[in-house]
Image 1 (cartoon, one colour):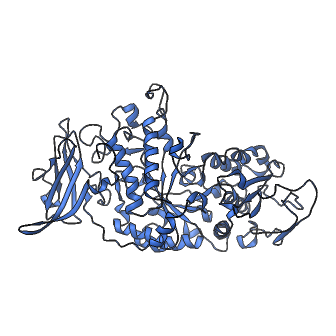
Image 2: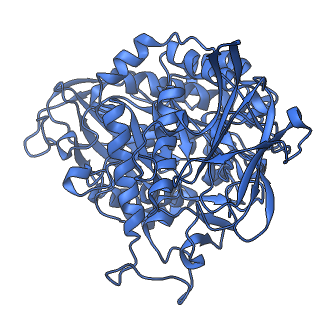
Length: 600
């Protein structure tokens, strides 16, 4: 089945597994090792147990499968090992296990034998998850880099502190930057060397299970970033594993990503596709994660992605679409959704590729959701302008509604927007601190009210001023509950509470029936006004003022006359605003020709 690319639980046959066998002399305990290296001339297991001597524990190849195996009696759980691979070209290298379930702490590179003894306590969560479709449920996501949220915390410490904070802030999910083992911390986890092992920097695999379990018990979903697009060239990892291009494509015009200095997986090879599809299943089943956010999908879909003319080869039809990658993504999505009802797969896809969230049986890629990069770019550009000039950029705030229902979208303000000189949400806002805080509060309220699920990177929920650094972490010392940062933090908390309580803000995210403009064209006042309709018949009127100043006696049409209760005012004093508002409600009068579209 592996050679055909169809072994969905590949981690059960490859890697290192503690075993016990009954023999005439009694029970023998040890570890079974298995590794795929079809072009190797020989493979042996090396480690502390044999003083890293490659002559002692030589493996045997299993027929024509290309899989080498060995059982070593007495090998301890927790023991370190590598494979010494005698490659096809005569080069001998010591390699980490591609299927390692645990690793040494970087910068050390050996694999570690492990066995889980964890008992899960999230059965209620898993049952509820299987009965729901997250596309039609509230989803407000807090994006987290575990190593720098509060530097120095372990998985088990995060299980307490991160869980308490996320619950307090009212988010429904966390999205974790890649947790799979990676040698270079500055890659933020996006250059993975051990796809089946959570990073050992923060603890053991069971410690990571405990973190997920605690989040689930608190009602928080867990999404992890997953990186099947490319992998680093470290000589001890996947690249040229058996002396030949094995996991990567053999043609460098398809097998290397020059911008990133990495190899690209050979998506057309059944065994490689199996390695990746099984890996997606592994995180969902062995670690109970609730979703995968797939990184750099555009780089997978296009053969000419970030390549010069002449630096890429077309597909069999002469086009630039990577047909093998398309097939892989469809297979991955179809497989994980069938095996794990209620999970979510999210594409970071920055182009207009059609049908990213269309089901695979209808020709789509099969993702649950897709990041709305256009909304993010347009919105952040608009708010960076002085309010005096925003009227000239009003189209940036209305354009997203021309395509808002073409896919199932996530509205991301992610880690990528607070690094590399881009500043932060706070520093993008023009004006003094009062103006910045008011502008940031308006932006966040707009994000929460726009169709789509919202995602916010850590630190932006309290208006961090410094760019994010994975080495320094967040500036918690700047958080002042009585100041502007505390006001922004409280606003996010209230936005999440209001959002979860009002189906109008999420139950029709993917349907035009859930949205109607009140006035899309008030560029002169820098105001956007629209209605959100819930599947339960509820309606919310959303009015966002980006003018940077008060509008007195502002008039607009509502679906019906009567009292409309004000559920949120971002300028309220509890958010350290100026306190200008509507005293908790407005009275709509019945004037012919002024009503907005009634709820459907």
